[in-house]
Length: 139
Image (cartoon, rainbow, N blue to C red; front, top):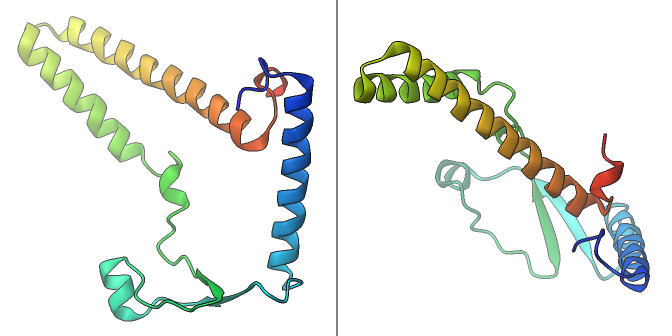
């Protein structure tokens, strides 16, 4: 869904669909829908160990408590060691290939900057797509 190149009618339909979906999800989470219900539970030991769900509750949705902090894994907070390790491997690779510390440092910095730009652009596009806000309005 590209908001900048879509017609006003498409945009209006998207807004209506977003509003309807928002109302539905709010009603679902408040247990206001009789035919659709959910329950919150912990994973069984084997389910947590294998990271899969075995149980199937017909007619009910199941939300599992996130003890593994899976949401945190999509953020870069706390991943400094991983990012540093990647920079160190890139630096060592280019230092071995070229034999020049300065060139390896420059290439490592350029690659790190390129990855930052890619994450920034991709993050803005993803945010614009998921929130139905045009990229021009993002700060």
